[in-house]
Amino acid sequence: MAQPAVLPVIDISRFRGPDSDRAAFLAELRSAAHETGFFYVTGHGVPRALRDEVLALARAFFALPEHQRLEIENVNSPQFRGYTRTGTEYTAGSPDWREQIDIGPERAALTTGPGDPDYVRLVGPNQWPSALPELRDTVLRWQAEALRVSREVLRALAAALGQDEGYFDQWFDDEAAVHVKIVHYPPRAAQDADQGVGAHKDYGYLALLQQDDIGGLQVRREDGGWIDAVPVHDAFVFNIGEMLEIATQGYLRATQHRVVSPQPGVHRYSIPFFLGPRLDAVVKPLLLPPELAALSRGVSDDPDNPLLAAFGENAVVGWLRSHPRVAERWWSDVLARRENAR
Ligand SMILES: O=C(O)CCC(=O)C(=O)O
Ligand SMILES: [Fe+2]
Image 1 (cartoon, helix red, strand yellow):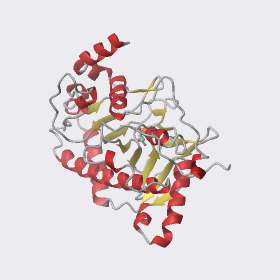
Image 2 (spheres, rainbow, N blue to C red):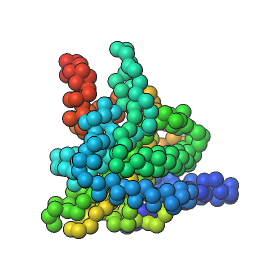
Image 3 (tube, rainbow, N blue to C red):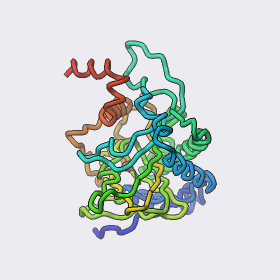
Image 4 (tube, rainbow, N blue to C red):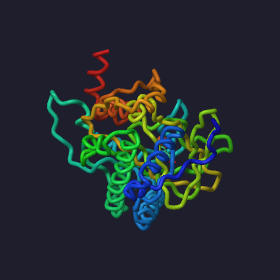
């Protein structure tokens, strides 16, 4: 099969358009999601002003003096929310050259008892910088819009897979475990040190990305080459997460991608949004129409990073692994219990 050089563009407003166009729209979406697992989404209705505002605030936050960024460092947060410095996150054994803020659903922490699952401790408030008070309101509005658009894309995907469009809805209510990152990729430190973020797949169901106009995101092709996800005006980049790969037994695929660091003197800002379900969600394989099931490729599970069908436990394992300092400070009892159980 010829390898695509550019990612397909999906106009999501066609999903609510004339009935006569529905089958063609769903076929386009299905092939974009099955073949590359990455596509641009236009027609999403997120106001330009909000998208500009959130990027402008991202630039303003990362321009703050370090002590003001560290005011919201994630070690302060039992829920892994807040700021992480450049070079402290690793992908495939090498440090990623980016700094970021992790933001989740804005909720009060729950009081937990001995019988509660560990994931209940992931529920809680975000941290917001006192030096940039506007950030909270703007990011929460953007988060709500990203949730709206990604749920709509998920409904369209359910329909494209021969299900009722509400098939996934029960796991994606107001308690869905969504995750926003606000990311700054500083210029590369040396010409060959270009790992903004190393090659990886996203977990969750879908990821939505708002990027600025610098570029650097690359998507793995089947033949091992890379496609540049060049910035497209007014479009979000969408990709399939590992949970949808599991649910479709590999009919949809979570494609690897990476970010190449900007050139010296150039800074890139991006805002990824990961659509996770409720923490108590359990992923069940869906029953695909036979003609699609015949094209399922199975789930490509990594023995170093096994995927669990129970979403909340998956999230706990992922956070404990990726932020050991937060884990030691706030989750030492859980770590000890898990260690003893091995
Ligand atoms: O910043 C980007 O362009 C993509 C980031 C990404 O892939 C991630 O954070 O998972
Ligand atoms: Fe990613």
